[in-house]
Length: 246
DNA sequence: ATGTCGGTGTCTCACCGA
Image (cartoon, rainbow, N blue to C red; front, side, top):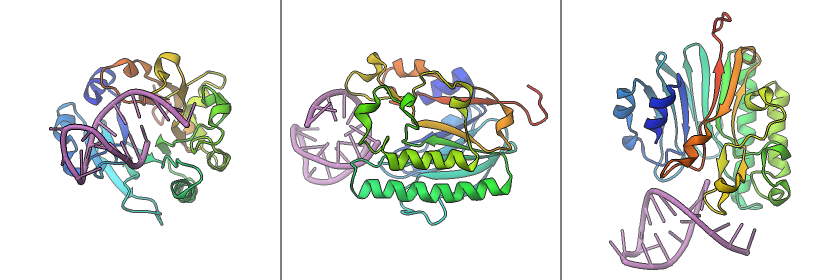
């Protein structure tokens, strides 16, 4: 499915989340045949993140967050690619709430916020891309009242996402489509896709030095109809060249 | 509260996390 999507849409740079496989099982050769270099940070069964590029080499800058609450979980990978610092992240789900998994989510989120501040202070053009497991506002969930106590919509989690935006990050999709209903995820159960009972939990946050280059953003919803598909749909942005060229 | 999916080990079903 990933290979079909890459071949059809030819994105320049891709981040992947939930590889759910140890490093040796990463399909590096198949991706190379499609023209993509890759770095990856896998883990058996759970988590796992990767960065792909067909526009130049990938210079890894970090794997795992500073003071990562659990370095055994592969949730963060960061690299310089084609003049942009790209972070692939997979924020913990956090359910059930309350409980240790929710505490872990908050701890991880706090370390991300700290590191995001460091990145902003550097002035570099940065995109934080991945599954944040947060619906930022009521507009980002099909039935907000049903999700009030869920770890993906809890006040503690939404406030942390808001803290990121207050730091200076731009939520790409919401910035270009302020009033639109946009979802990136539909549960496998409850017939969620057919009912369009979706969530917007996959985000691309841009640093102030990169945000002016944002020209388009969207979700490739059609992949959700494919056989054996993911419960997430590819979420993308288009950036202008640094000099303003298309 | 419920539901679906894929992976794993308890191993041809039961469980877990998402």
